Image (cartoon, rainbow, N blue to C red; front, side, top):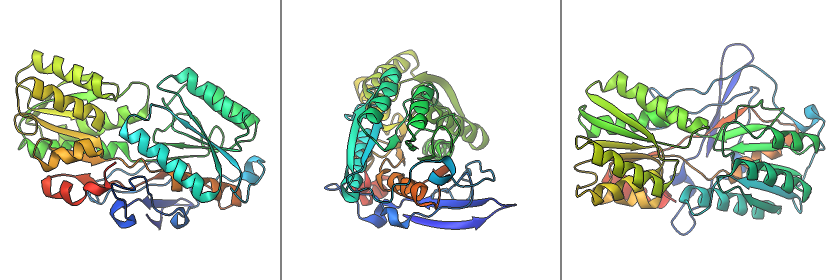
Length: 374
């Protein structure tokens, strides 16, 4: 992980936080290892941003506004100077049978162990009402700090209110919520999802040589990840690859089985489809299965580009059966604990911490970086 400062107009500074998996020695035997949290720094801004090394010329910058960093003293929260023995709650949004969620959860468990904290874990299993109940229950069980992977961008206000009433700070990861940082929650840690969509469009456009018929398997509705990955892809495709038509957009709910069903229906309805953009790898692998079932060759007859970085998708690039994967790193444990440390110590947290992700763009690239997948 790297961090650097750059100045901007007025009081705003922009923090760049990057996770380079190759640099931190991730392997298939220890796929949840992340960069050391001690290398994280913060800036006097309510937002932070990063660009992908594969997209440094055109990556979008996360919105930033002037403002003070969020601290325990500012909110009147009790300062926790040592995590040892402290109960930290982690609310996961979706089942851990998905590789992204499994890696994310393991990263939290590993970092809690490293910090000497006691991790209290709850999984909402895609149920927004259960996630609210889970968060309240974690507080009741004695969690003094919370890390939440929100299911949706909206709808968790009762949970945020419960945490605020108990003076329990909340770090959100992976999905940005629509509430107010340093009020309803401390900070968001995640990727630049618009940039991910743009990079996916570039990979698809190049694979199709600028001509073709593409369909989109959308993620679940109600969260900003789906919105941003869609807008980034569509905008980039229109701007750079006018010969590529996006004929259909249909929800696959970030689920492999649903993605396969939807892809099968789309392929049956339209034999001219030459590319499938899946907004996560689970749906991408589902599309791969649907293409094979339709008697066509995935990666050849129909290109597949998706986002995440699971081994099941990346390994298929090596064999030529998958086109490209845009990485979305789930190993937030070290950064989440570092953000809580900075909040408690007085260094403060910005409104957003945007990490740097990589890509798997061809067989040689995927083979060289397979140990980074999860």
